[in-house]
Length: 158
Image (cartoon, rainbow, N blue to C red; front, side, top):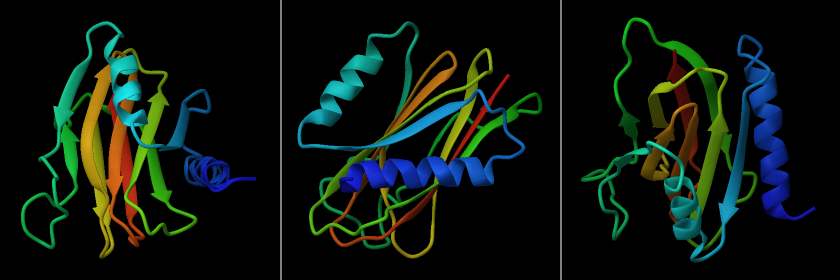
């Protein structure tokens, strides 16, 4: 089993073990992207109807406490929003290369109203973009070399 598959299995296990209160028809996956693959995934998602995008700060070099902290929020919660997904992403292995990661979800909600990508811990992943189309969401993350970030993704909908 390669490292990307182990990571996917680990995240799905973590989602199932943490998500008892969440609807079991919700589906998520995490994919470690190869070089140049992020653009293809973004283009594929952009082909869907009514896609809205929130872009993170341009991260040409990784910040050390200044500039982009890595977190990104697509719209803020409102009183009618209901938690659809809360995923925690932890890498099973640390890489000496920059890694780009795609997180994708389909919810049971009619539409997604808010997505929050939040880092906790000392090392951070950088959220490059959040794309939302109806009840689907996609997050693209960049992880610096030798970093071991902890990322929580929350999705709300109605």
